[in-house]
Amino acid sequence: MSSSVRAGGLLCAALLTLSAVSCAGGGENGGSASAAAAADAPERQRLTWKACPAPSGSESGATGKAPGTDWECSTLRAPLDYGNPENGGVDLALIRAKATDPAHRIGSLVFNFGGPGGSGITTLPAFADDYTKLRTRYDLVSFDPRGVGRSSGVTCLSDKELDAYYAADAAPDTRAEAKDLVDRVGKYARACEKRAGKVLPHVGTSNAARDMDLMRRVLGDDKLHYFGVSYGTELGGVYAHLFPDKVGRALFDGVVDPTSDPVRGSLGQAKGFQLALGNYMDACVKNSDNCPTERQIGELLRRLDEKPVPGAGGRELTRSLATAGIAQALYSQDFWDYLTEGIEDAENGDGKLLLALADSLNGRGQDGRYSTLQASLNAITCADFAQRYTADEIEAKVPEFRRASPVFGDFMAWSLTQCTGWPVKGEWQTPDVSAKGAPPILVVGNTGDPATPYEGARAMVRELGPGVGVELTYRGQGHGAYDGGNACVKEVVDAYLLEGKVPQPGKICS
Image 1 (cartoon, rainbow, N blue to C red):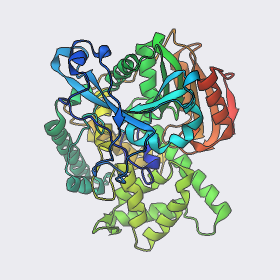
Image 2 (image 1 turned 45 degrees about the vertical axis):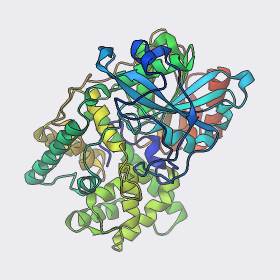
Image 3 (image 1 turned 45 degrees about the horizontal axis):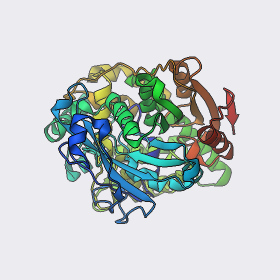
Image 4 (image 1 turned 180 degrees about the horizontal axis):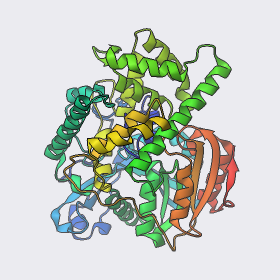
């Protein structure tokens, strides 16, 4: 399963049904529409917008279809290292759909859908129907952040190696198994350094925030109007800290707690997924006589640890993959029926459905090829956070994680090996999102969110500072709020983004 304190994101909940979109752009030495201007003064470059090509086979959810005539793609050239811009550049893939009411256009609305590692050029067209009203007055814009997808996406292992990596035991029960896990993580880190070493020091959130400000200037906007989901809220908070006077109307949805270090973040996610599992089981028994209990799930995972069951394509459903599949299904109520069916199938020796859910979380397409989703997530997380944990330190924390979640606790605890042995030092202990002088930012917390627990929204409001963060509470389920279809949330958010109407702090939608 995903091993980041900002793990998952809205993208993960949708990968089973997304139509992937790819845009022009590529590696750190790729060309842009105005390379000379980008080298001398990046903000002077002019974007050349063209029809978006069909996705490549390596992109998760690829259907072979371009996103349609409403969408245009371009490439933005940014310095690889903002401190030393003479050291070359990186190309960032962009996508947009122009406002449908240009006479009342506000500007661009830039989306980041989380991860970190989620592809904006893939996700925005797939969710575009949810943003039809916003599009009346905004150009809808998204991008692959540096180190993601078409923007010098980080790759580490081959597809076959990744199949083995995600199937392996990620919740060791013995010292020998713990050593095997640490060895695998070290091998993964060395492979990342070998294949993506040039960009690894520069893929952190601070640089992504600087990229967004460059994007704002090149797009011709005085202020950055922003829609951030999951990790995208952390990115938005860092942007607000660095450029408080450039913040326009900004929405943070599915909010990461900026005060959480990796231990607190992973522990919070363990509690969040356990809460979501309980909510799923409570809802299930009201509508069905065939619902799994927590005890059944635990027994199934223990059996799979000893003997995996057949999955698909010659692959097996292991304990690690089953846990990832269960977690993936908890990102959205839309997947709860699949979870019931998948657990029953696995108990009867058929692992195909839980394996498909796990593949979605891990960014594996039906053709067996992996996107950069999880490799990018690792690279960005480890470029951000300075903490590095040993096996002994993690083992001492396992009991606390088990108390937080009997189902997910062990996996969340051992996910703290994520940056062990990583070749790049992290920038911070926790990100600074204080944004004195910024205008009101709307922060939406979902009480049933498994990946970014509700408490994170209040922490974000507090850290943004007095008069900046404005909290809206959604009493719902799943990850995030706006795309969940709640009419109250949509009404409040649309009024804020389209008309500048800031709700009263503490407003609740049910």
